[in-house]
Image (cartoon, rainbow, N blue to C red; front, top):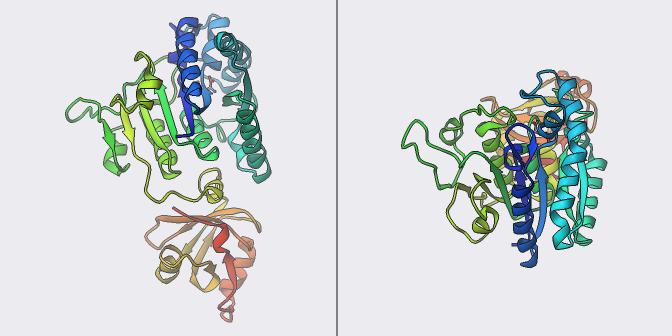
Length: 353
Ligand code: GLU
């Protein structure tokens, strides 16, 4: 265990609506300081900007429009970082602020920059406090909640463990036993169906986004916990292997680090439907995708754009960077003399899902 990401929901850092809770934050900082004493690096993905902004503006309900939420976030973010700085001061720990966007991380150079900055901050012994850059995110490109951001940070930073701490006790089997499920070995459609939504005035994520986040993180090889941040010493107890909340086990063969950007940080510009032979060559033999295996192409994309690769049953089997534009592929498909070796996606630019 070298590195953990702790994702904290707004409800864990505030009391009531938007009122900062310094005691809760102090307790969290004490735990994080102890984790670091054990030689484990910590990254914090902290919500609370919108919530704290609401508190400062004396709002009792989360505003509906994006501009109002963004304004709240801008007002609350500075307080949020201040609160973390104050909380870590007794331990001599320095924090640094990182604000990310979905769109930014989809660009390779920005993704690499974010990764390098995080590595350098950790090398300096700093705790990165990460949030979404709400000012410039729109509905279409918002993470929508920080659960997914937490998972992306865990994937990007090769973390060993992700703790998603909120007011939810874990994944609860509401239709069955009514109990929290202690261990999930694989996120099947049945597990995903157990996720129900939230009623909290500041929370946005709910269980669905937490399961989605757990999926991304576990596929990246990261053990993921969903647990109540209100439990005493939760971070350390989870680290010590105590069974609290729900633990999601990582997959046995996670997607290689360099291909995760392709798999999880992209919004594909189109898709390529491939035949069964090509699907087999890709998934079983690790081959590149060649033009004769492409049945049809959907959407408009340029060379280098990321596209979904879909089998004939409509299931996305891979995601990759196309060497050809959609117009070039259409031309190849119309031309029956397509050479067998015309490569559409090189195996190194293809992440199997
Ligand atoms: N970036 C948001 C915040 O810090 C995440 C949670 C939300 O959308 O309310 O407030």
